[in-house]
Amino acid sequence: MMKRIYLDAGHGGTDPGAVGYVVERDVAIKVVKAMKAHLEENYSCMIYMDITDDSTSNIAKRANKWLAHLFVAVHFNAFKPEKGDGYEALVHSVANTELGKCFEKHVKAAGQNSRGVKYRPDLNVLRLTKMPAILNEIAFVDTKKDIKDWDEDHELKKMGIALAEAAAEWLDLPAKEEKYKVLQDMNFRKTASLNGEQLGVIKKGTILKGTVDKNGWLQTVHGGKTGFVRQKGEKVYCQKV
Ligand SMILES: [Zn+2]
Image 1: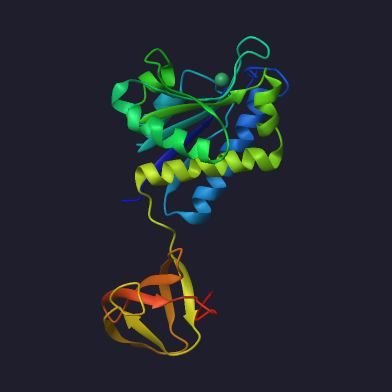
Image 2: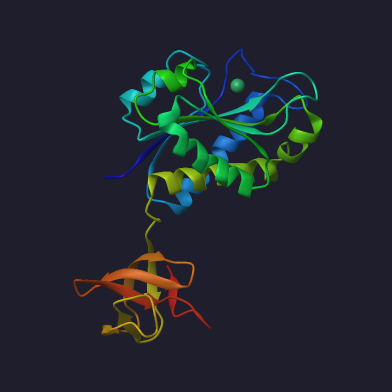
C-alpha cells in the first residue's frame, strides 16, 4: 500500500505565526513545498499538502479522514529576541521519541543545531491526530544568528529536503520506479555485484522498470525474476527514458 504523508505549513489566514527577521508562515510554506517536491520526485508515496488558511481546528480532522500514515507540521519558533537558538522536534509523548530523533538526525545533518525532542501532549495537531505526528520548529525567527542560515530560498529548500529524507527513512518509503533503456547486451544478476550469480542476458533495446541504488545497480524484474543490472559504471549502460 502506498504510504500517505500529510504536510502542514504552520499558521495561515490572518495568523502569520511568529514574526521576527522573517515571517514564520512565509518560510514554513517554502519548506513544505520543497519537502513535497523532493518526496514526489524521489519516492513512491502520496502527499496531502495543507497550506490552506485554516490554522488550527480542522487540521487533525482532515489528516485523520485522509488516513495519513504520518503527519508532519513545519513551524518556526520565537522566544525572547536573540535568546532562542536551534531546532526542536515536538512529539506527543515518549512513544514518539524515535520519530522525533529520526527528524532531528536529518535536520542536524543539514547543518542546524538542535535543542532536542520535546513532548507536547497539549498541542492539538499532536493530540488529535490518530497517526504518528511530528511538529518541527526549524529555527527561531527572532534570533538573528539562528534564522540567518534558514531565511533564503536555497536554505529553506535544503531544510525541506532534509525533512523529506527523514519522512522517507521513518516510513521506509520505496524509491520511485523509473524506466531505463538497455544500451548494450547486459548480464542480469541475482545480486548487485559483478560477481553476482548470472540469471541471464538482457538484450540491447529492452526497456526495464526499477530503481537504481547509489552504486549504480538497477533493481528490476526481467523474465519473471527479480535481479540486478548495471545501470552505470565507467559509462552509462541503461539510459533513463
Ligand atoms: Zn508556529
